[in-house]
Picture (cartoon, rainbow, N blue to C red):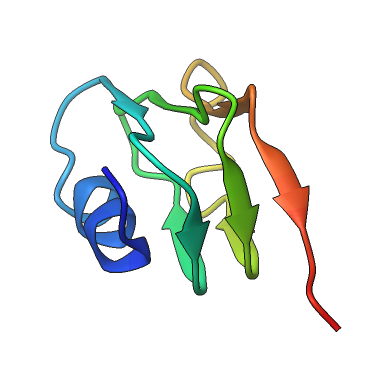
Length: 78
């Protein structure tokens, strides 16, 4: 996965537990909305994310599901 739109779509379209692994650096903005009954893991695979990642925990009442972000190098260009 190398585009912010691909990452956004993978998160938005998840209907069951999913692990998303980046395949390259990503530039752009993404909103990750937590869904009831769906665990989402975003593994940056050591790549860079240059943009804004908004986490929206809409299923905060469902405490056994989560959004996990790991192994991502967040950068900002000025």
